[in-house]
Length: 440
Ligand code: UDX
Image (tube, rainbow, N blue to C red):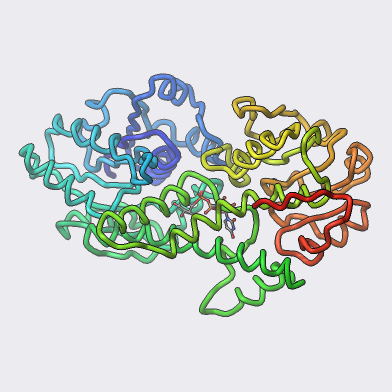
């Protein structure tokens, strides 16, 4: 069994560390935030990820948490880098946390392999290799092993990955990282470091492109009287296309897609190539969030003084992550229009979001509201179209940003219903009194 040091106790570091511990390895996770490490030592997980707390508790004897670099690197066979690489002002990835870790490796005595899990621009591995060599650390190996876990299903994604991508300068280093995953049943892609780095960016950019594509199809469906749910089903059954990531909605968010699409676009631009397609993917995604405002105006006219309940804040269900969540843009736009915004989310408390009133229950959020907007498809919202909710609302209007509800059943339950790209969700059926301001 190997000894694994992990830099970064975020989603990737905690899931990777806990899963490796569950495979029988000895793990030390190191983070720079003492409060986070104190909480982890007490068995408290600072993020919401289904199953993680239980898996950690079951493997607690094989995983330690520390703020001390020396503890993480002592005797380590592998040193995983799982620190954040958030976007900078320019849209490039901010690699300062990665470089801090590289500086800290100066204290390494043995010959561990550094495994880069963080999403980094293509060429980063080359630069790290040069930096390590320049410090006389030629005995340290370097492997790019990008992470593909999705929040909410992270444990399953680790244990049953679609593939494991390993990019190495030295094939023996690659072999050792491959061996670490020997008990997992997944195809392994072995390649050079640059290509491994590019796989991650390309995969996320491609998935984001599919979402923006289906969202544009949805917008056209609204104009021509088609239903995007049927269209996506029909399209997705083509084996060359597949059914995944064709759910129309209010756009993608989260810690990866927005940042990685932007990072790939900037990487291409910095290398002299204008990646036009990704510019469109980003723009479509921004407009998609704002279309909710137009849908509300279609029914309510001016939003000043209206009360809107935003149901769901997290960027997707089964996570407490608010990074780049569409809810933030929609809440800010509604406030700017003069609406009173109430929010409900089963895990995100919402009190840090400016200008909104968080409510503990769905019923409290919708009481007296002029509209309810489904922002995140939490399973708790599947039964939203009920008598209690209808009677509590000032106007029984549901804007379903995730196509969670059945339009016919919702209308039969006495609600006005707007989905995304569904029959009857067209902007062409504007009521005359609505004073619409169709700004998207
Ligand atoms: C994503 C990638 O899936 C993962 O491989 C990578 O490592 C990190 O980024 P994550 O951000 O956790 O994972 O969530 P994901 O389930 O991929 O959803 C991303 C966003 O796209 C969410 O806002 C989701 O609502 C949206 N989405 C997804 C759609 O709008 N439609 C879809 O069909 C799928």
